[in-house]
Length: 373
Image 1: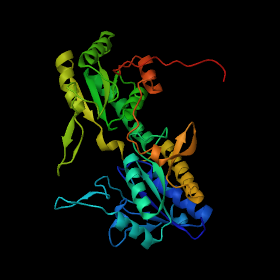
Image 2: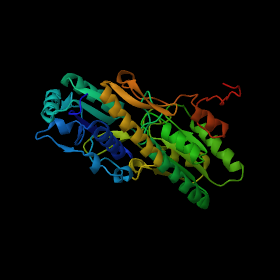
Image 3: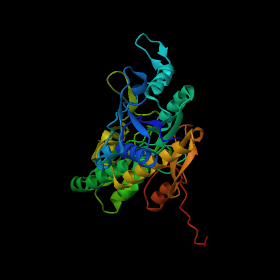
Image 4: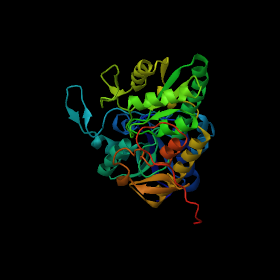
């Protein structure tokens, strides 16, 4: 790719910590290494679809270190609507891919770097295909459920927030002799719950991937109390189903439905079955906001610079990934296949079981070979 090219970068889907560090890394690497123009597309794909176009030019010198420390995304983002089939007020659906292609042409873009989850990358890759535009993906999601990568931008900070919440809940639970239930995000994946639950010393961790019963949960609580301890701490992922197999759902204004409420559901039943005062806490969007952790800043910076290298190679249709301690890339077609879920034999599940944490399911004990490699 010549030095006179222009690339766009957009953040799409839910916000998380570390997005601004990604944007900074892309802008700095593209400017310093290749002398390209970089445009930040505002509010995801809508910045190229609406008229007038909405974007900002990102100069390398303007992207100082303050971007590393700031939460959210200064480019803006959206997690509503599919521009390939966007719902209109009259009940019809409209395909905005022609507007997207025209917007990219008006801005003179040769490629787009998309920072998003599997859904965002799937939609935007199709928009870019129709527009004849190169695309490189960068995984970001607090849920850490993107295939092909061990870590996504935003996950580490979300886990830190949940772990700190657990640290605080232990002391108030002990003071009042209560069971405290922390409901965390994650959609259908249990990575936040399992990771934070282990780090925060939870007694019970419930995730969508592993079945549980209230009888077993109650038995574990009684076993903890029988040791002489007067309190119990439980972590539950928002996507965990009730015992009747139904998801706990909250309907927001405008009719939008999201996971939520499994914590209060469990609290009511545990209090009745065990006789311990039980309080639910829904951590919610606190997991998305705030200052990025050092790990998220590092991953974001490594991903951003690697994405620019892929653009330079013309390696379209790929996503940067963190695998085995290094940055690599994987085909987008292997990524946009739905959520990556926590396996029953994952090292996290095995570790929790070995620590005596109730997780449901039937996770095997972790076996580590002592043989030299």
